[in-house]
Image 1 (cartoon, rainbow, N blue to C red):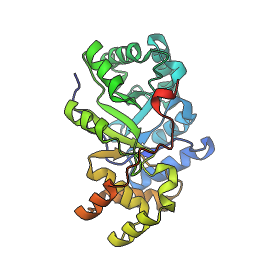
Image 2: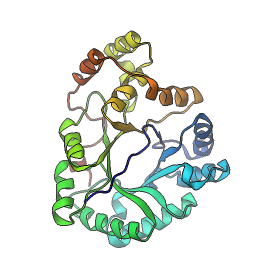
Image 3: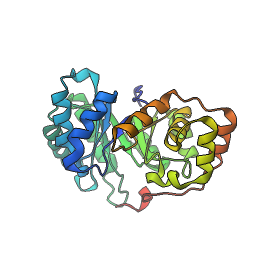
Image 4: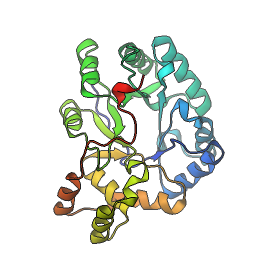
Length: 266
């Protein structure tokens, strides 16, 4: 089945971070105190992340890197080649977490891809095998056909899409939960109800929402583009929200996605 894994509570997501600004942003984040970085082959900025990490002088054991194989890289051979390309761009001998980016169910390659990733873990190229955007039925298929589950599933999650049934499954089966788009791709900043709650607890909207995520044992990888926002996001880990605020936030769920439904992305 799974082996125990606990990700950093807050990492830096590099989705849509321009190639030309990635290295400087990561160097800034390292200076602020970030040690977990989330990238993917199709983000196009793995080499810049790798350069920043190399220049940092940090020992390899002091930072965590996630990368992901894209839909057109699925399949046993595809996964092997995709991982090697990512490692080359990152300048690393292994990746801490490697994920199937989207299950692409109509292609029917995610089971074979996951099986190959388990073998690559045995070879020492992957430390932890994860997935991204997997519904319960995809996870259950891995469990039934391979007898193994990912150590982490990274999915869209924010106040408007809380995915409680999925996260209950994660908890039951020892899968760590991680949220991409934890601020609903900035949509939370226009929500007057969230602004009111944030004011009540003396925090920014971002801090409020990230602290709410962390209160449910969900790790987060928010994007940031300035030192101020990097610091603000990281300090959300120190914010403890009152029970009445948590309860109110739990009531925001309306099954609203800012990204595609994984069942439809093929």
